[in-house]
Amino acid sequence: MIRPLMYCENAEQVESSIHTIKTRIQELVELENSYTEKLKELKSRYMPEQGSFGNQDYGIHEK
Image 1 (spheres, rainbow, N blue to C red):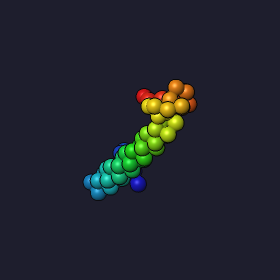
Image 2 (image 1 turned 90 degrees about the horizontal axis):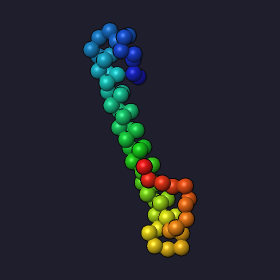
Image 3 (image 1 turned 135 degrees about the vertical axis):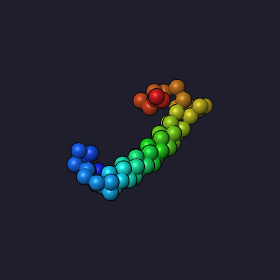
Image 4 (image 1 turned 60 degrees about the vertical axis):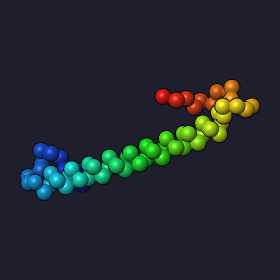
């Protein structure tokens, strides 16, 4: 649990919150990586560099 900082009364509570924050960040990074891989898969499937679908716009664009 991430305890609001103003309610942390001892070092253990702060450390626990920091641990939870770091864990959630790692989970989000892993989720982002999954989405990035899916995007690459979709782009390669629907927008091959050569082929009949290459010139069509499927609404998938790079950042």
